[in-house]
Picture 1: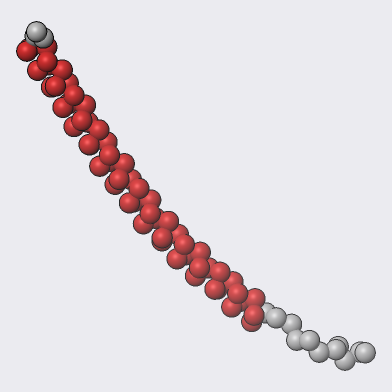
Picture 2 (picture 1 turned 120 degrees about the horizontal axis):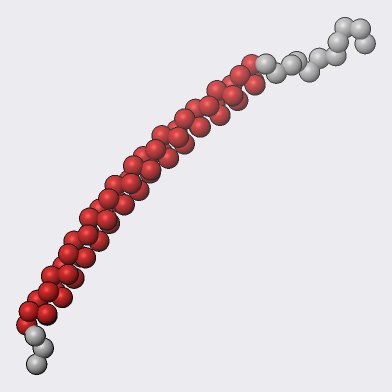
Length: 70
């Protein structure tokens, strides 16, 4: 028959490991959520910058007329 004290210690160690793993999973989830928010913000900024660049390029577009010396 197994020693009940050894079995109890084993379960205690397993419970401690499980608690650490749960904390790690929660911490990693927080990191992933934070990164997802940052990525969303960066995508919004990129889209805005692309629109501004396109608008300024359209404003600077040269006319397609022949120069007067032709």
